[in-house]
Each structure stands twice: as structure tokens, then as C-alpha cells.
Amino acid sequence: MQEHTSKGLELVVGEGDEARTIAVAFRPGLGGHNRPGLVWLGGYRSDMSGTKALELDGYATREGLECLRFDYSGHGASGGAFEDGTISRWLEEALAVFDKHTTGPQILVGSSMGGWIALLMAKALKQRGDAGRLAGMLLLAPAPDFTAELIEPGLTDAQRADLSEKGRFEEPTPYGPDPNVYTRALIEDGRANSVLNGVIDTGCPVTIIQGMQDPDVPYAHALRLMEHLPADDVVLTLVRDGDHRLSRPADIGRMLKALNDLIAGGH
Image 1 (cartoon, helix red, strand yellow):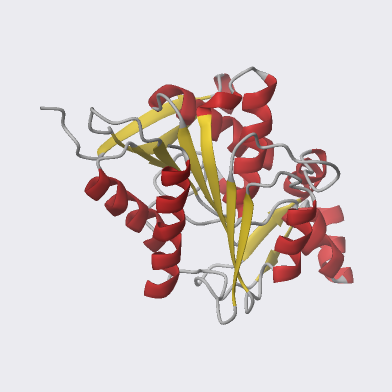
Image 2 (cartoon, helix red, strand yellow):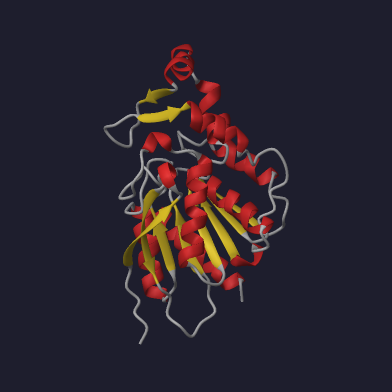
């Protein structure tokens, strides 16, 4: 009988001074079905032990599905310095973990910044001829291009000075005791990875769940993303009282129902 327990693993990504050890949790799927696996893509400064990630893993356990979670470098249990992180660097890690551990079609579940990573993964997979690896995409409060679209416009003169002189600035966050840190490298790399500048062809069904009371990613951002997703199989659910975390029991229920619908739609 195939084992269906989550395994704690590590994967070294990059070479030389760029090498960093990525912490991975992988649950093999049970044989005998053709349903896709699930890949968790976390947000900025979040990790794979958050509420939504664990609920996703629990769902995979009950359904016998393959499930992959990991921490970006500088996050959670992974190595590397957080301030070395860029969208390109974290995308490289996401693709490396995806290639190492997954087989067959997958549903990418991207939360906040993870939604940006998911869209970039779809582009990268298509460019190398692997578009068929994506069975669907579930984006939770997605934050594509957040550095240029949501961070830069609100910078104060002092923060701009810090970026110019120190290469970084800090900003208080309600999600933990330590401030958010944004580096010049992250912001410059973010511009180079923009997706809201043309048609986004994911090659798969996309479901977006967005809170209308989200203080970090305004729901207008999700509406703008919809404009760049021209395919017919895109669904947007706006949660009137939803915040950025989308971790309440009702929000988790919406996430799992969306997964059920994406999986059912693949048959």
C-alpha cells in the first residue's frame, strides 16, 4: 500500500554563493485516480505552516491527493537570508521544487505574493513546453506586481531615501512583531517580472478569491488582474467582509469548495 504521509525534505537550489536549502513538505498521492496534485505557494513572509497551507494539506490527506508545500529562502524553515530574496529568486525555487517532487497535472494554490509566483510559473512552464502540467490555479488575495503597483506608489520621502541610501526600508506590519523589509533589489526585480502589462495566458482554469476588506491588496487589484486574464474559464469570488488572510472557517470552506470545483472540472 502506498504511503500517504507528509515527508519533511530539503532541496538545495542554486550553486556556489547562491546555494540555499529549501524546506519541503511533500505528500504523495494515492494511486488509482487521475486527479491533479496540489502545490502551495505562500505569501511574502509567510510559511508552509500557516492555516491555509495546513488546511490544504488536510484536504489532500482526506482526498488522497498529492500535496506539495515549501518555504521560500529566507522564510520559515528554509535557509538563505530574507533580504536576499527577489521574485526571480523565489520563482526559481518554486520551479525547482515543482520539478523535483511533482508528477502529472497540478493545481497551483497561490496566496498573496504566491499568486504572482503562480502566474510566473505558468508562463515559465508554457515557455518550456510544459503547459499541460497545470490543471488549474486557485489564487487567494493575489498580489501580482505588488512591489510596483501597491508598494512603490505609497512610499514616503523617507522610505525613498532609505531605498536610495541604504538599499532597503522597513514598514510595520499587523501580522507579526517584526517589520516588513523591502529592498531595492526586490523592487527592481519586481518591475522586471511584471505580469499586469499584457495578456496573461495561464492555459488552465483560474479561480480567484478576494476579500473586499483587504487592507493590503485592494479588491480593485483583483478586478484589474481579471482584465489581463482573457480566457472564459476564470472565476472571481469577492468576499464582502473578507480580509487579507482569508483564514476564517468560512474562507477555508470557500477555498476547499473552489478546489473541488477545479478538480471536478478536469473530468
